[in-house]
Amino acid sequence: MADLDDIRDGKNFGLDQEVKSQGFYLKGCNNMGWGMKERMSRIFRPDSGKTVMLAFDHGFIMGPTSGLERIDLTIVPIAKYADCLMGTRGIIRTSIPAELSKPICLRSDAGTSILTELNHNVIIDVEDAIRMNASAMAIMVTAGDPATEAKTFANLYNLVDAGQKYGIPVMGVTAVGKDMARDARYFGLASRMCAENGANIVKTYFCEGFEQIVASCPVPIVIAGGKKLPELEALELAYNAIQAGAAGVDMGRNVFQSDHPAAMIQAVASVVHDGEKPDKAYDLYQTLKSQL
Ligand code: 5RP
Image 1 (cartoon, rainbow, N blue to C red):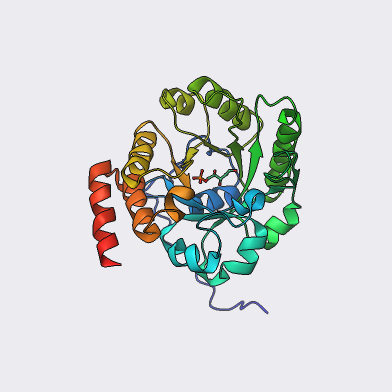
Image 2: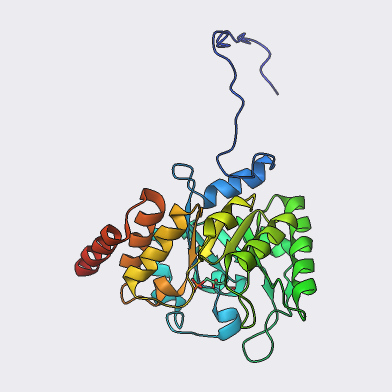
């Protein structure tokens, strides 16, 4: 029973201080509900407004590709350096210790592989994303592909409906197909389509004219790393993207296929969060590498 005696009246109402209205630090997110904002702030560091996501979902279409043969040996040791982990439920459940307590961006579409035709996918049940305490759900879209565009965008807006219901942000991942142009016009259109259909984060590729893609996309954009590059080039890619307005990276192969993934992810983080120039970040990579 509540105590009814010794009820002390409040007296510190700070009447000389205005109650500040609180904006939210991420682009396009001010009108989100509290739960969604909390999840976004687990992914995007509030001090920098940026994120280093570590992508290791590649196996869901291509099996145990180089660097992902043993998640326990390659991803788990470097997971602490990432702000957010992007993977499938099967790999996260079996191979990522829950006590790492890293926000999860859950790969939420599945169904086809490199052996057949990609992107004829379905979406997972949002209840499983809730069980996994996902901070975001990621889904692939294939703008411009006649066979899968409508299907993948239907997946996106259905996942957004589920995400809105439970307060889980959705990241639209823009695919690159062999017949698709890799330029600002294409990635700008695909990114904008994601946002227009309700994606809260967009993942796309860096290209010339990236500033225009960022300017015309009303939600934060993170870039994929793409195929493995020499470390300095990968750091230049990250730097150019951040300078052009990216809110972070969601990198896979350029981290886990590096000769020194732990050094590489820390060098990438210095570019993303501290605005370090590529040559300085590369020095950091070399220094960390020599200490391992
Ligand atoms: C594709 C993805 C991958 O996670 C993405 O390609 C990131 O990895 P990488 O940096 O290796 O390109 O979302 O569906």
